[in-house]
Length: 319
Ligand SMILES: NC(=O)c1ccc[n+]([C@@H]2O[C@H](COP(=O)([O-])OP(=O)(O)OC[C@H]3O[C@@H](n4cnc5c(N)ncnc54)[C@H](OP(=O)(O)O)[C@@H]3O)[C@@H](O)[C@H]2O)c1
Image (tube, rainbow, N blue to C red; front, side, top):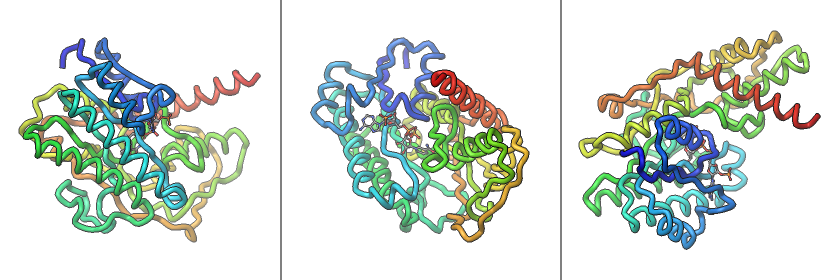
């Protein structure tokens, strides 16, 4: 991929999209195309097609989509299906029509069967039903992933690369304690508890479920690697993980340490734990030569530093 290649990063303000945008800029790519939703709603097929016609992107990273937790999946299941399927359909169709060289689409580890042998290998997809609480999201992401495979098969190439990162974290994550992902939500909860001098923080479940966390910079690194290499020998989709997981209890303790919260952690065992383990088998991508570079400690520290600065600028802005 030449430094002057036209690369469209959809969802460039989000957690993963912003990491990709940062990385491309750092590497000296000079023609990065972005469009906020106000300029281009990716659900609008005609506008997406016109956008591709006008800007002629050669590479596309589709990091835009409707993301959310259990509550939103339960209250707005139609929106999840509708928005993600429309975005993926519109972008893939336009990419094929206007001759995009390579496109990366993000699936999710929620697509894997609920009772899945660990670590979860790509071959296991569709062997059983995903977890019912995130089914609308999982099905919409399966649709995008298998659309990529269908296009590649029909047109005899490997232009569309579906990847499956495990739980992402980093700058620009959603730190809302109610709607954010577990890692960022814990960070903001401990930060607020420290600021208010709270004696304890109560967390859901037993703390025993294990999760794999991938820094968004490592996801960006894997994407850049896939855009730059000849991927014709690879089988898709491709898991993107770090190869190890930690318990939620260990995660909470690591964040408490970084935030410097001195109060007690209490576990409300009457609340559900979720799946006991969600670790990806990333050997397909690793045997292709890619490996993650961010240590968990460094990743947590730079994420917290970013969050602290946001809180500080918000407070200064209000004064
Ligand atoms: N985060 C994870 O742990 C994770 C793990 C695996 C896979 N993924 C997948 O990776 C992708 C990116 O996730 P993320 O966590 O980076 O999400 P995110 O932080 O919520 O960012 C999503 C971005 O998509 C944009 N967007 C949504 N709908 C749009 C539309 N109709 N038109 C234009 N832009 C639209 C959003 O713009 P607004 O700011 O205007 O809403 C936002 O910038 C998603 O497809 C997700 O399913 C995420």
